[in-house]
Length: 443
Image (tube, rainbow, N blue to C red; front, side):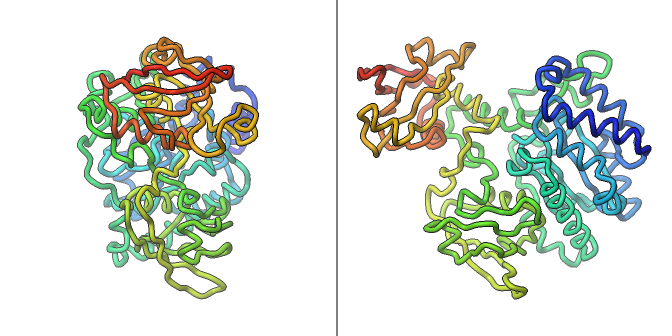
């Protein structure tokens, strides 16, 4: 690998990340083809070939590092570039792994590859026999390609190498990290995607259109449940909850160091403190912020999770006790998945919580529901609300006879679990000081 080529690609990706948004969107095909041309014959990175990666990991005895990157998506372009070309810090560690760069989800084994499908950059580390050591990729890192995220990635690599050195004696501690059974083993088996895509990308034609993006996996599972008129499982509405959901924030430059704890939360009640390092969570060794989210993702509605932490050089065990409804406190409004969910039950409306000051100005009670229509879709299912008569700046006060939903995320969760295609819910709102009621069909 030549340094000048690294510099060229690094500069290009960073430029896209910070300013060339419209240009990149127009040439998605070009971006994907350029990525292949750059990395297909790289000395370190195996390009888009998982089978070869696992075979090489078995042969060499090295752990397998799989980086999943959605090339047309601009989020994480900077972090992607840093990981690929951060010579000084990461190269000595990357040399100890078999490295695979994966740019599509068509051929993923969903019993093995379970992670935050909404992210445009994720990493999973395996033993050659398929045992998963850990995950990397979070909304904290998605927004930030700074040195702190690179440091967090380095910590994850170091932790994975330690686990690999202790394998298979530590295999029992890794059981909780593995994926659980799903109704479909491959994305191409899920009805929404079946028959539309092939296992291999169409490099001879329109390659982007032949690619299953990671977020489409979650979209397809939600559509599958919805088409059967089944309540959507909470884990598909509120996937991979961030640590903030239960009351603590993790530092992006460490594996899992507590940066702050919010008073009165589950984390505070457990005794967690700023500066604590999370060593294990629910018995699983923790390599990154994503590993913490995975434990929460798999947690039940009412559960006590042991957390081994290191504080001032001493290790101790705390217990995080979660009560019913904890998962619904996750903010999903910024996720890619929120858009199709809005089409299902909000008719394409984008809602935001009305600030207290605006409530006072409009004469709305300080408590209860007040969600402002920030945006309206214009096509397909997402035009349903607009056709029903909703307008931007409407303030929604009650949905389906309930006025307790303080956030869009809570409302989405309720409707996706309790109302199904063909149902109609009544929505009370205020517009320009006038109260009215509109019927909203469920899609």
